Image (tube, rainbow, N blue to C red; front, side):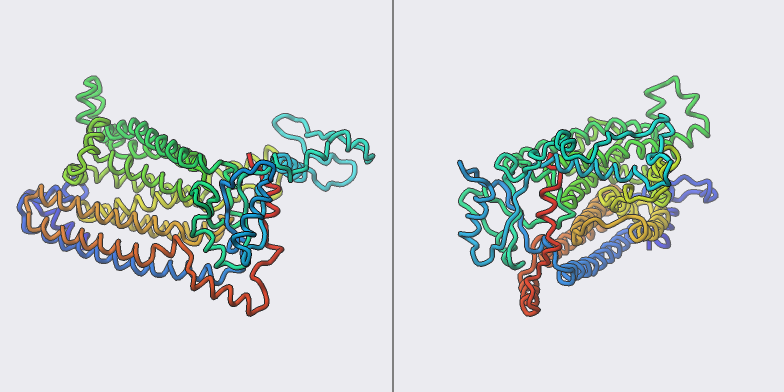
Amino acid sequence: MCLFLVLPVNYYGQEMKHKHIHAESLNVFTIANVKEGSRWLWAHCLTLYIISCSACVLLYFEYKSITKMRLAHITTSPPNPSHFTILVRSIPYSVGESYSNSVKKFFTDYYSSSYLSHQIVYRCGLVQKLMVDAEKICTKIKAVPNGQPSLKPCCLCGGSTSFKVLTDEPETVKDSFSYSNLNLATRDNERSAAFVIFKTRYAAVIATQMLQSPNPMSWVTELAPEPHDVLWSNLCIPFRQLWLRKIVTLLATVVFMVLFLAPVTFVQGLTQLEKLSQTFPFLRGFLKQDLINHVLTGYLPSVILMLFLYTVPPTMMLFSSVEGPVSRSGRKRSACLKILYFTIWNVFFVNHVSGGFLYAFNMLSSVGDIPVELAKAIPNQASFFVTYVLTSGWASLSCEVMQPFSLLCNFLKKHLRRNHEDSSDGLVSFPYHTEVPRVLLFGLIGFTYSVMAPLILPFLLIYFLLAYLVYRNQVVNVYIRKYESGGQLWPIVHNTTIFSLVLTQMIAIGVFGIKKSPIASGFTIPLIICTLLFNEYCRQRFSPIFKKNVAQVLIEMDRRDEQSGSDGRDPSTDAFSILSVTANFS
């Protein structure tokens, strides 16, 4: 519809003599080329209806499918300690009594029929340090023939790693290390957090749905993540600090977004040579050259913006860690949201304004003017975002396939450290917090430019086709799966797509108003209302399944365990008692 209906209408929107297509300006293919009051604007309105309806139908079936997969993941997965375990934080302090005794006494009194056991969280950095050191030593020591050195020298320093040789006499070992330091189960090493294990899944869920005491700030319960998903370092954070940490990280994120306006404004200035030449008159002759013009307005802005954007993911991941989530998936989900908000604001909105800092703040203060301002700016920025799709989209996929950073690290390890054996040190999980916001940003660009500048759609179509192949290969063959989150990122994808649709429709109203077509503007308003109603239906129908567990499913699973003669828990899989002793809580 966009390529075979909207694009010809845009191209022939003005009574003018056209050049050859390869010599035409990109603005000729945008809605800015349609004259005011044109009757052909109904084509844009009709196409917008088809796009919105198709997107809502696809979103509904996808939400329904992923909901079924989430329920199947819960019902068909093998018994996991996290199904029976809750995390208790902010345990009240009792004089003369340990946290372990307090937890046992509390849950024995109030959950006597369902309580099974508990595991207090200890602060034990010494044990973790010993484990890490032992693991490093084991990777360095090689089984070699007699008479050859067991440790390979380093090419950079020319020396070898040396360890102090201890005799096999017990006195030597005793003198070198005191075993009394390993006594972890003491009152000083305990933290006000514990994993409480119940006999059934349903009992564990019920314990997290209710307040445990009249003081909501004590005995705070939530479902425990699976053992490999636990972010152990954050379990020692006092619960009363979490609200302050969230406020601080929110302010830090806003400040970082504001500071990032400087490179975005600089990039925006490169795309507008007229204003750049007015600001710097001595550059007029230099900017008139065709090669300089094409480089400055074409590839250079997108490349500069992409280089600055590489600093965003580690910064947002740091902010998410300070926030205090108790799971790695929760930290990655929080970083994903921060990066998504950051990219939508700095890459999309700020790049469409032309007045720098003050103009961006003025537009943010007057929310009602955003559709009109974007309606004026979007057709003029089509060339920038076409280049952005090429540099940030296609180029990112090629980098994802080649893995240049991992390739460089592997090269240095093999040729400089002379370690030619494959190890699992460099294996990482899929970077959802960086790739999901990138894909959603291109979805937002595709929706907003589908009617305004449909010439960008073939580039986006190629990107999404390549992205499907690349990401599928990476997930299956490259990245490892460290933990399961049960599809928790899908609501972010759904909500962002709905936001993209509504923003596109609001921008269309502004464009139709500029083009003096009140009929098209009037027909677009019901479309916004229907899209919001559809989103509300999905929020009521599917979203609660991603936030809460289904009692019917859990009870049926508990009954199956009871009928099979098992309580559903395999003691060999209960990793909380091991990890809570060996993890580094610092």
